Image 1 (cartoon, rainbow, N blue to C red):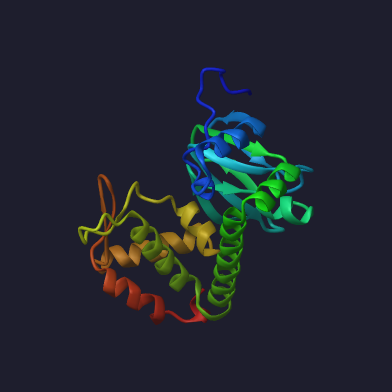
Image 2: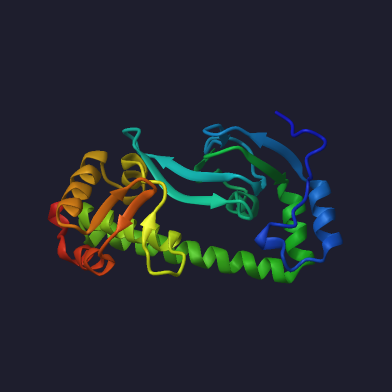
Amino acid sequence: MSVEPAFPQTLDGIDLLGSLAAEDRAAVARRCHWRRFAAHEQIIDRDSGSRDVLFVTSGRVRIVNYSASGREVSFDDVPAGGFFGELAAIDGAARSATVVALEDTIIASLVPSAFLALLKEHPEVALAIMRRLAGIIRHSNARIMDLSTIGAQSRVCGELLRLARAEDTGDGDWRICPVPRHSDVASRASTTRETVARVLGELTRHGVVRREADGLHIADPDRLAALVEHYHVSDG
């Protein structure tokens, strides 16, 4: 579904393009194709032939993949100001994941030729892409290490810590708002909903976490961090 003409088609909020002059960002925006996606609507499928780079100008999306048995594995959530799809634009290979809108989202897509021209014309943008790719490699290495060396219960505790840190407002009050769905934590920790429910139950009984009306409160972050090291691979 096309975006209403009255909607501002601007890339001013895209972090990757922050180093560009306003007129250069406007020029890129004019080369983009703009679309609105409803919550839970698929934006790209890993089997699609598209190689465009996509900018999230409003809303939020989730990058996921699926195992042979159909279990969803979440890689990342991309908020407004972020982007995705650069790998396929750079190497011309197939998509590596599926992307779904988590809420009403506006996407500006840029064809590979225009994206590569942007990188050639603006070295600072190319450097930002290289730093992002380096970050992806480091994150993937860490995730492989976690899957190889620690159990599912440890991964669940680690994911709760990561989500709480992302929500931390600097006042020392760690919470995850809203309360995360078991399926979301399971997909990020590469485990099952049943394991997540069991771990959360144990953490609640021991006073490490507390479910409240506005979210999941991490009552004892230090103890939760210690539990990441406590469980063994055989526990998962």
